[in-house]
Structure formats: structure tokens, C-alpha cells
Amino acid sequence: MAEPSLRVALAGGGTGGHIVPGLHVLERAHAGGARIEDLVWFMSGRPVEERVLGAHDLPGERVVLRLEPSGGGAPSPPALALRTPSACLRARRALARHRSDVLLGLGGFTALPAVLAARSLGIPVVLLEINAVRGRATRWLSPLAGRVLHAWRSSLPAGGGGSARARWIGPPVAPGLLEAGEPREEALAALGFDPRRPLLCVLGGSQGAAVLNRFVCRHGPALLEGGLQLLHQTGPGRRAEGLDEREAYLAVEYVDDMERVLRAGTLALCRGGASTLAEIAAVGMPAIVVPYGAHADGHQERNALELGEGARIRMESALDEGLARELLRLAGSEAASERDRMSRAARAALPRDSAGSVIEELCRACGAS
Image (cartoon, rainbow, N blue to C red):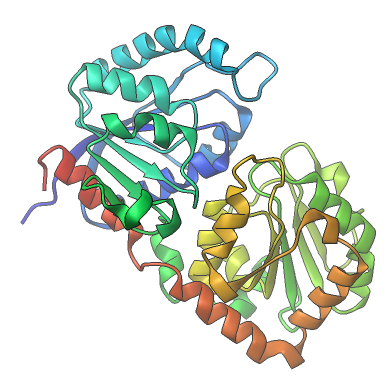
């Protein structure tokens, strides 16, 4: 039986967390399940979007929907109300030109005008809530969606998902992360590290994390002296916030080959972005998670809790010498069985083919299954 062919619109941008799940879905479609004939991607226009998407040869068009103030950041409710009509008109023209079969909303403010435009044209909408707490986009737009997919059980509507439109599928990850891949020693050597020594991966997310950068600058030398190697993702334009060049230390602004890094790592120190945690869990890397504390809903902490014993949560106030000692202990050979328990718990938190479930729902929404 021939695979269904889809013309897909995606709406999501602003951060890597609203982009990467869409890339994983497209990669899974390429591996089998549906043929993406063409696509249009609605985004906010932030530089991080081009950085994340730049390495991918995606067919179709990218359309910027300007909702944010010129200085960046989330628009205020009055500004959002003012800018949405023109953004909706731009999205409507792009959808009509593209002849989209279905729209997948990935979260963020960009989804608002794209979903409104899709519904005005009779195009079915599927929403993906990637965080463990429903964001504003999901709360506002759920009534307009034929299906709302949830990466984590805790974001389902009260009562465990009583709504017929809500489905728990798990967070989409790249298909390669769910398979046996490059051996750890080969991945370490390819990144320029010693295959015999443990590697700590410090991952601040697509935009970096100043608090993690400061921790590395303050305690990184002691971690290196204690036998660790460090891969430090500083964030775009923030390389100066890392250590100077030295042996067993690599600072990068953005991780282009995340699969190789995750297969090389012994332990992660990271933010609690849902996509980051899903990828870490897929390969079973134990993680110390430092949630971003400024989110009112605390969703990064809730994301980490979904991994159970696979992740340990440390607040920003605990980024001190004690944490450095804990990292050295946990990465050491004496803690191998402890890391193994964390690894098994992390893997157990993820369904095996979440991206395939998204494709299944996209096909069902437009009658292509």
C-alpha cells in the first residue's frame, strides 16, 4: 500500500523547543509513514530559528509572522491583539498558496494567527503540546483543533484526558536516537575527546543559559582537574561566557550534531526544555536538570519530573561547589550502577515512536490514512 502524500503546514518558532519537535516529525516521515510532498513553516523571525533550521534541507517556504516587539520577547496582550489580524491575513495567503492539507501547531505565539487562518480556510488543525504544563497556545487554541497531542501525561486535561480530542503520545525524538547508534568511544573520538575519560555535557538550550555558563567558569577548572571532560554549549553569541581554550574542554555556541554529543556523553547538566530532556532520555543519559525559574508555570521543573529517577533537579541557587563534587562523583566509575538505574528510568519514560504517532494523527485529520 502506497504511503499517503501530505502537504503540511507547521506553526512554531521563537525557541528551539517550538522547532525541534517539528523537525523530528519530518525526519520520521522521511523514514516512512507518510510522504511530505511540500511544506510551509510559520515562524517568528528570531535568529535562533534560522540557526536550528539552517542545517536542514527542507522543501517549501518559511513565512515570518511578526507578532513580537522589535526588541524581542513575548508580545503584551494588547500588542498581540493589534498584530494578529495582519499576521492572520499573511498566514491565510500562504496556506492558500501552499494548498495545505493539515496544519501542525508546535506552540508559541506564532501558532495563533496560523491556526486562525487555517480554520478560516477549512484546513484541519492538530496541536502538539511539548511541555508537561499546557502553554497559552494550547489553552487558547484547543477548541479549534481536531486533535491535541500531549508529550507528557501531566499536561492532559483534568481527569486523565477525558476529552476525545486529547491524546498522550510522548515527545517526538529523532528516529536515530531510538536505535543502537555510534559507539560511545567512536563518538568521543569524533568530537576530539579522550575515549577513556567521562564527558559532562553542559546544555543550556537553543539560546544558552547564563547561569550554567557562570557555573562552568567558576567550577569547570576543578571538574577538569578531577578527571572530567566538558562539552559546553554556551548559546549563540555567548562563546565569551565560557572558559578559554584548554585541554579536555570544548565550547560551542550551538550543538549541530546532538545525536553524536548525546552518545558520547556520560552525564548531562542541562536546562529543562522538553525537547532537550526527551533527547537525553532517548539515549538514556543521566541528567542533572536546572530548571529556568522565571517561567510562571514552572514547566521546566515539571518536564524533569516526568523522567522520574532518570533526572535529578537542582535549582539555580544550588549551582555551587557541592554540585561540582556531585558531578564528579556521579560521573566516576564507582557510580556506574547508579547511572545505569537513572538511564533505565529515563528510557522507560518515553514511548518508542512518538513522531510516528504525530504523523498518524496528521493523516487521520485530513483523511489521508
